[in-house]
Length: 397
Image (tube, rainbow, N blue to C red; front, side, top):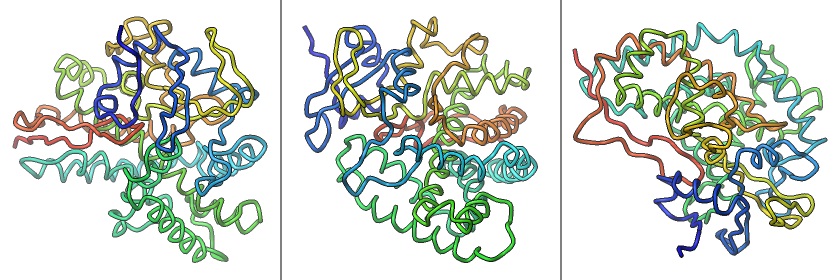
């Protein structure tokens, strides 16, 4: 009998977690991994839809403050519980509200059009660099007041934010050398940008709103900085993987592409079903506040829990025929790719806006794009993420 095991360092697990997820759901819905983290500590894994939803929504049983007594105990939204999280989330919502997102449409469309025009001017492009990374970074960077000439830095800083989450989950910091230094560099840069804005008229962007709250005494400098980190993570990671993976699906499945070109009003459904099937963020983290018993197993108080979004979103107990992309799936919106509960991703509205504008732009030119048969797309191997790292696309005239 094969022993069920999770190795966070395994390349196979990071590239193709779906078979293991199926076994976890069926054989070990509460799975204990002794000494599974890089520091030798244990963790537990939840993989079924209902259990993942419970861990994300039940504030009495599960805590979001993963790190408490070390250098990773940062005042970030993802690492705080109520009432501190409630206060910070209120500040985040004020800075990054639905009204602001609704006003971005024309500006986002201009960026999409510029990037698409550039793509079409080449015979061959690396699509991740040219579009899926550039679009969210330009938008989020612009909303934070970061000039375009710092795009390379912003990409590095964004990766540092994501690496910090993986290290908090138990990844060996040696897998991401320099991530903490990059994180601090980003923080110092945002602190300097905020200082330049003090006493000046609010530009009505995210940074402007954060500065107003800082000047009013509602946010400390460290909280302002880590809020900026949160916005970069929220506005970049999921969007980047959704755009790249969605475009790859359109180019590799002619029937889906044909239908989307004929029914562009279904773009929202396309994005939601893609997010369900290929969750860009594969897991979130929680700690138990007390002993939690599920399926006859007890997760002890204070234990680190990997909450597998990617497994939950393919749970056949909730999504029939879960490994199939189904545009007409009636409950596709039940996915938890953006999390759930009080920590639902604050960047979800922006991600959906970018996806809507980008996919609509693709449809008109799909016949000009094709995947390079000589170089198949390469998937990301960073822990906890799922998406395309490199995708060469041929462009016809």
